[in-house]
Structures are given as structure tokens and as C-alpha cells.
Amino acid sequence: VIGVALNGIQGPGDLVASQAKLTTLTDEKFRQIFDLLYGANLKLDLFQQHGVDRIFECRILSVDKRFRGRGLARELLRRSEEVAKENGFKVTHGGTD
Image 1 (cartoon, rainbow, N blue to C red):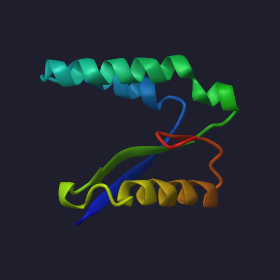
Image 2: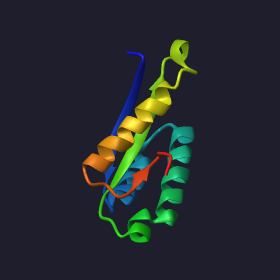
Image 3: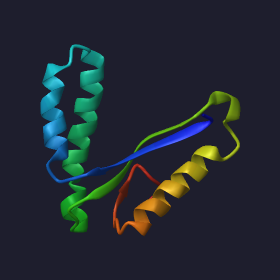
């Protein structure tokens, strides 16, 4: 594997549910990072801002360090955004929009 893009679909209540699960984590640094990220996303409220009930998320994007600097991440992101558009998503989170 040279590169990977992990995408998903986020619904309006997903952030609150994910944030609630953080209390069960034993890794305090991990919990703090994700608590901060979830909190920031809740404040953005992209669902209301854009009048949508689902958001296409580019969750993880990684390229093997031996192959970096060749535009592979850019291409993975472009293809992810293409999939989002082909499937009727109006909002892509984590992309270049």
C-alpha cells in the first residue's frame, strides 16, 4: 500500500455521540485532542450552515513516506471529493473546500 484515504459519512448527531464516548478512553492525550476537535466541529455546525443532513468526511489520508512529494495525497483527496460529488454530497469536510 502506497497511500490510503479513509472517508465516511457524518450525520447531525454523530459528533455528540462520539464526544460522549470519549469519557471511556484511558489515554488522556487522545481524549483531549478529540474532545477539542469534536467541540470545534460542533461550534461550526456545518449541518445548519449548509442546510444538509449528511456530510462527507475525509477522515484519514496517508501516504507512505517513501512516496511523499509526488502528489499522491492530492490525488487521493481529489478522488475522495469526486466520490462525494457523484453521491450527491453538498458538503465535504476535511477537503479543500
